Length: 343
Ligand code: KG4
Ligand code: ZN
Image 1 (cartoon, rainbow, N blue to C red):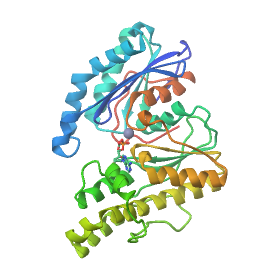
Image 2: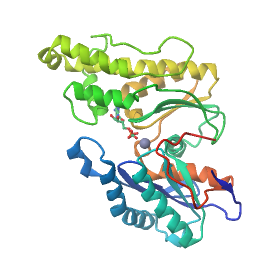
Image 3: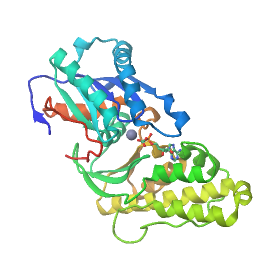
């Protein structure tokens, strides 16, 4: 997909992220984030989820303004840019096309290269923004509303997907579970908060694929078991025991992630473990993985909060890695809603 070009030294990069409901632009110069502007679209909250067409229209409305703010905050002008990195998948196709087309136009006007970046690669590189000292082999657990996968990196831009979810992502398990419990959206932060006051051994929810030498995940069974449990026990009982149920549900969701991550870390002799994506904010998952990594003598890293949720600085960081080894994208690069992570 990318071609090689080594004409220009890549020092200052504009990153652009429009894959879902955040319009974000960032300036990265010499590996330092000079600005990272994120505008979260509020328009979707009244619909209880992201409406794709509205997301595209919001990106169209905001993209020029957000890029202008990123340049202004960084104290540079567009002429100072050496390249542009833009998300071109996975995500909502209409939303992706807004950022991609904007980047192509700007790159052409400025006569600089642009590169399409995989959104998941961006999340992984968000961790390198916070921790440039990350050692290889690096094992990353990618956990978000749309993804649950274990990725082994022998080196930069080198990915081996060890396993992923066969159905729901873990973030979905949190969101759908919270909905069943009558909690707000997104459900992850709510369950995390309530679980702190509960007994996590109150009820044993099922752990899928915990045994066996594979790194696959499944979360649809956990969600169904919660539904059956709520129906059996009744609303009043659930309301009364909400923190305990949240703690038990969260433990079941996290235990499989921690178990498989640590098993893979040992098997592949990882020198560092990372966790990225929205669910990386979960306090149990953070403390559990930190503890077990420390016990195994392996470094553990999570990105700073602003690089955990969708942002353009992480896209710029991944794009920088690629551009520095001479890659850029052709002018007919397309957007791909189900783009796979590739080397
Ligand atoms: O990566 P992200 O911001 O968006 C995408 O899915 O691309 O992830 C959002 C997901 C939601 O499912 C949300 O419930 C979950 O991250 N989340 C959490 C926590 N904070 C956010 N899940 C568990 N515990 C949290 N503290
Ligand atoms: Zn994301």
